[in-house]
Image (cartoon, rainbow, N blue to C red; front, side, top):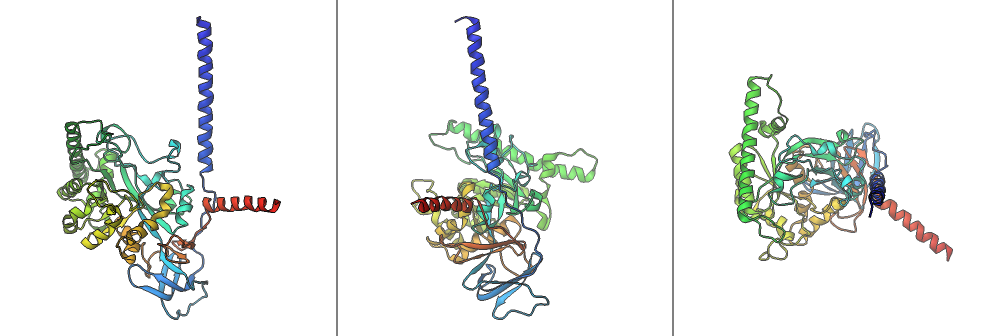
Amino acid sequence: MNTLTSGVLDIRRIGRAACMFAACVGMLAAGRAAAQDLGRKAPAQAEAVVIHGATVHTVSGQTLTNSWVYFREGKVVGLGPGPMPRFASPPRMIDGTGKHVYPGLVTPYSQLGLTEIQAVRATLDISESGQATPEVRAVVAVNPDSTLIPVTRSNGVLIAGVFPQVSLGGLSSFFEGPGGLMPGRAGVIRLEGWTYEDMAVMEDAGLVVNWPQSRPISAPWMDRSDDEQTGDADRALRTLDALFTGARSYAAARAADASLPTDLRFAAMQALFAPGAAQRPVFAVCNDAEQIRSAVSFCQKHGVRCVIVGGRDAEACADLLKRHDIPVIISGGTARFPRRDDMNYDDPYTLPARLEAAGVRWALANGDDTAHERNLPYAAALAVAHGLAPDAAIRGITLSAAQILGIGDRYGSLEAGRSATLFIADGDILEVSTNVEAAFIDGREIDMDDKHKALERKYREKYRQQRDRR
């Protein structure tokens, strides 16, 4: 083949590659555009509202039958059974006879607004490159127009903890790729708003740390030796120790001399050492008992609060967790397989009930892909089917989740003075057949339409047309 012919073939190959690349870009752009929620956001609450005649699940207290809830300007003013009080001006009345009123469900661990289509990298904004990036805040990357948000809130989930990517690979990924040792800070959002600022309940809920494995992993996919894995774990712990020690030293140095240059990483960690309610926790992502003990010991050494995220072996550490009042976010959900061959088949299903019996504070996350975050109440229902009390299940996806995320003074229960973030359902929210009929976030009435409902209407129309042609 002569040089000219070879050059022509190269040009053709380049041309075809360019066309394919342009087509892929176009498909991704179209996919991203199609994955935008076009619904209007709700305005602030303009008129007072009373829901009456309903079963009211306060969560923090008793469940009230044939009761009313009165809220205005985004806050619950009062609630109770029996006759309603007299109102200075007539509020909007909603008949809740036969209905149930719940506080908005809270998913404590998710990537809502950070991911859209798992298989399309252009719709993922869940990680940064680097070993330790505490300055990264997950909330600022939230897409307010994600189509997954209306779908999720249609099942009563109105508040979400959003976490940067956790490490899914071996220990080497802490040092080589995205979702490393310290991927950033978690935040809390309400599932409504024009911008991430509108949605943010708490922009900095705590620092996420992918806790190093305490023992080597023996699995077909692991391509590192036991010695290499042990070395990686030791190196990761030394790195963490240096970061936390450096952050404290940085605070002391800045207090003595405010003219010192700002270190973004150390500045982002200062809330971990703040006094009282301003202190933010370390969200230690770990499952093995050895990891949990290591994380608790480390946090005690450095004087920081700890929340375990994952917690598969948390029951084995129950005494330790109770002693230090360390809560657990069960981020793997309940609909999963046991991790080890010697576990009972129902181990994931019964974990919430076992932690409840052991006196460990816990909250439940769905543990599935972000597109299925709407199934949070069914993850709790599976735990109820395996021994957990229904009231404890509801608390685990409302008030307990809110408290662990640091927003329990405003969300997660129905009480006077708290946010009017609630929904009306036609039955028990743990039942698959139950429908959420209306929802309010901070008193704002939310549009309950979503992509799934639009698709249902579309294809019902298709079959109606086919029926009419017969």
